[in-house]
Structures are given as C-alpha cells and as structure tokens.
Image 1 (cartoon, one colour):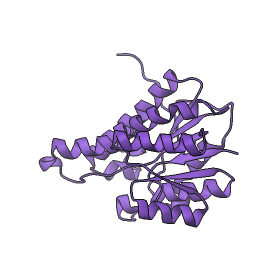
Image 2: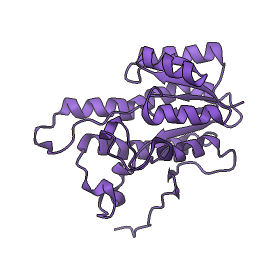
Image 3: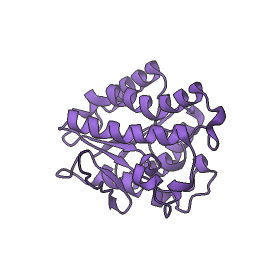
Length: 237
C-alpha cells in the first residue's frame, strides 16, 4: 500500500489531495502546522496527523522521525505547503516579506525533502510531487489569454519559478526518485480569496496523477491537469 506524506494538508489543495488519495487507497499522513485543524482533517479522512512547520528545521526533523517510528518509510512526498505574500504594487515590498514567502515555498521544500529522503529511499517506487504554479512560468505570465498574465504577486511568482527549477535540479540529482512539479491552475482557495474558476478537485488533478502514475514515467516534468507543460526550445544566443 502506498504511504503518502502531504505538507499543508489541513485545507485547500492539500486537504483535497489527501481526500482523493485516501479514497484511492493510499495511507495518507496529514502534515500541518495547525495541530487542531490537522487532527480534525485526519480524523475526518481516516488519515494520520503529523505536526510539521516547514519553516522550522527542528519541526521538520521531528516529523520525519515520527514517520520513521510509525510507518518506517514513505512512497510519495507531496510538498504542498505554501503562502502567497503581498500582491499588487510592489513599491513598498520589503526584503523581509519576500524572504518569508521564499522560506515557506522554496526553503520549506528543501527542508522537507532533505529530511524525508531516507524514508523515500526505502520505497520501491519513490515519488516527490512539488506543488508549483504557472504563475512562475515566463510563457504563461506573458500570455494575455491566461489569468497568470494579469496578476502582480512578485514574491509568490518568484518563489514558484524557483520551485519549478528546484524540481528539475532534484530530478537530475536523484535519478532513482521520480520528482515532478504540478501546476494546479487558477483554483478557488484561500490564497486567492476563492476567486479561481477551478474547483479544488480540478486543482488537484495534476498532483493526484503524479502520485499515482507508477514506474516508467519521466522525472523533472512540469505538468497541469491537461498534461505536461512543454517548453519551446530557443536558439542559443
């Protein structure tokens, strides 16, 4: 049976990912900073709650030790925890605000991945799915037909661009682990005041597929609910 650990799983995309994977037969571990909310979701879904604050090294290490003591290994790590940060005119944007977003959205993924690598390496088919966003994609943010082109969220978009690149680097570094990034699309969640046109179920399609596709699929990909996001090759200049 597949054992899956999900960060930020107490609400939004993380919670829906947990619900769907539980229904598909995964043993799901609800990672969340909010203990009350995390336990409530775990109880509701028939999962197990594991406290984790991805910005705290000690908390992340304790979460990995907790899983090692109880499950002994994991098959899938879903790095879902994220924050949005300031939106709109960046005239007053501060370094501290940007660092906070990067600490959760990028450094948090690094902390969690590093801590859980030994547990993933015990799996016959280890998988990491990083929840990124086309908000960090140059092509999408320059395409006027896409909603990403009309949003100004400097810290968030920069963090997701970094996360997608981090995914490709990890995929190269760890060829025995299938590591990919998922773009949920414009989904109605707390991050956007529930203005997205997709449901959370639609927004988790890519992540759920990455968690279930099985051996033989590629690593270092960026996918959305419709498939792999292709990058046009450009001549070297």
